[in-house]
Length: 94
Length: 211
Image (cartoon, rainbow over all chains, first blue to last red):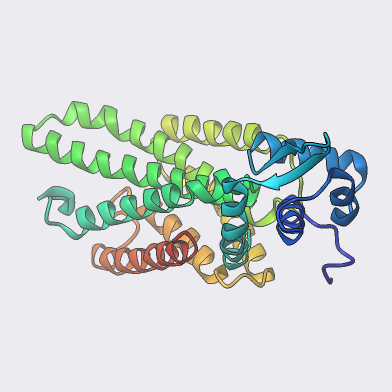
């Protein structure tokens, strides 16, 4: 089954959200992030809260009082480690 | 020396190597699990944690046995022997369960898995304590091992052979708890070497992904 048709698992969703932020020069507003992540708003909020709690992302309010989401060092570290984690999962069929 | 267990015996060296490899696999995957919170990795880690405990219990039993033999305390040995079988039964059943569940958790979402596996492992431990025999452990673990082999063959995972061998070697190890009874002594060393190779390969593969 290809990636488009099958349901993404939790690990992939988290990776996709972080990758989108990184690709948008590490600064994106919540609404476009929700749109690009291809999730329902309820699911998105759950994942978003989790990413904040895990300190993978942080919120920044600019001078015009607009909220932006950026990756933390931990978030960048996760993105780097993701390939290894995914390789490990495949290797051991987990 | 009785049972052939002394600090220079192959059994002693084998046990130490396998225990170290099991705990190294467990600790090496800690960061990966903390970062991903991926359930499959969690079950995989617990497999080796419990295997490590099972091998450690077995190793300590042999050490105690050696100590009691030296001081000629046969009564103490009679007390510790069933206790070892009980602990080995519990830890190894948990390890085998986690190995199976690490393979099938996506297919069979089993919410009460931890309660169920603990309960069954405890029952096996109690039965093996009262019967003082590792046979009961192997009888209960056999269907789980068959299930591991079945799902490993079905899966396209590159490590399926390792899972099959780990399960089979553990099964053989259960019989080695009663030295010389079920498996000829000379073949022990053959299984020990193969076990070390299998655990070594798993550790090497884990290291590759956890640099």
